[in-house]
Length: 126
Image (cartoon, rainbow, N blue to C red; front, side, top):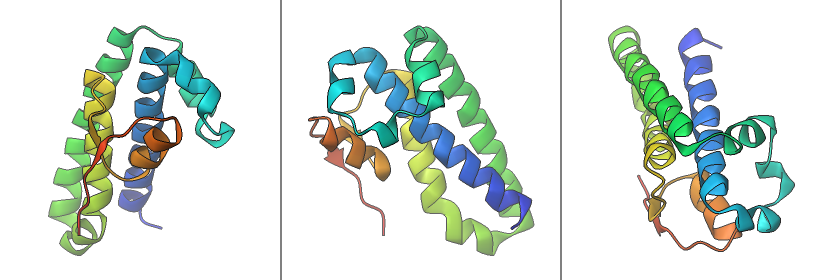
């Protein structure tokens, strides 16, 4: 597996964890409705922190995602085409984690939000 693939996988997984953590931070009663599969160590660690710290981390990770996008577009345009939806989902997750707004979501975050009783607008990309 290429380093670029590993980077986007890590960024995507981390973005989802951070978004779930922010939602649970802001809506602690949703934790009881969440399947334990959503409640990993990173989610637990971040959901206990202040919203400002979560937002700052989301902003940092958006910068890292921007760097990945520049790198992959320059080094492997075909891989960019294969993974751009992953990057878009990660960006939406990080924007939600930063703002605390979950009115719209994409990818696995939609599944989480629906599971805990929220009804976000679902953004599909095909």
